Image 1 (tube, rainbow, N blue to C red):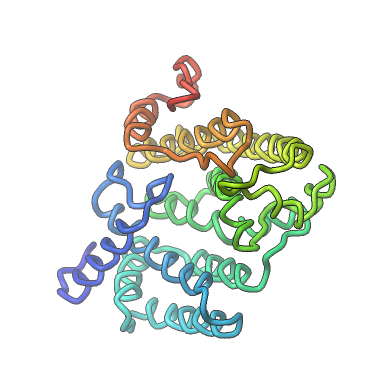
Image 2 (cartoon, rainbow, N blue to C red):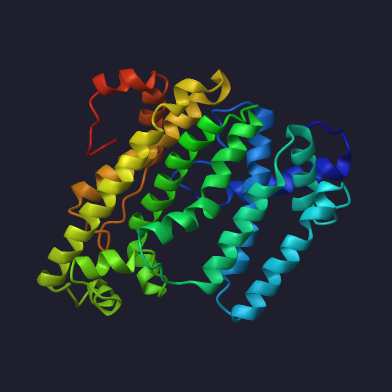
Length: 309
């Protein structure tokens, strides 16, 4: 935060409060980056969190939710011009000016939230990647810009990691999303493994119901394929932490390790995310933090400890 203006200080404080209220497997406003960048990350998260809430609001219909997002979008230009009124945009305007962040990243995130309102099915894996291009990749690019990086090759590596993180979250939360009739599993892949959207509902468990074995066997094949593709994306992005400035290296390694650990736990659970939603505990983060202090090429020598982290 560069300004001593009390209004801006208050806006930052509100964004920090909003950011710390929400648990994430991959901490956004991490304690492992310098304080000024940490505050900026909290502001970016607050911007996205509010938009996400508009998109997911259960009461209003599609048009009302899109109207809320349109109103949120309308505050972006005044924010960049230093004329914001909403506290999130007051702080965001300061962050954008301080770090010279690109407007397009915020626009892309808003496009993704609008897609969440309009689209609950994705035709194939390519369509899902297009969604991630707007929903996840801008966040990684913003992190790089906060640390002064604007190299296209680093953006490309970051996109692979961010897309992989988004996909990991989809597989991890499959049961929750299916229950809400929001299907991020590509329809083409479902059909390839002999599953329909209706079958997915039959896989949801309750105290008195066990998923049919034949369907669950097909589900395991589907998830093994999707997790495998997601791991490939993580591997494509793996060189990134060793190519950036020191202030963000550990955070990026921690993020990469956290995503790969969640995928390993999905595998260890036999892809049964219906009974066992994989998560990371505080102790897991400590272990991963210690591993994240080592260059990427050297982490191969450290036991992965699949069951614990």
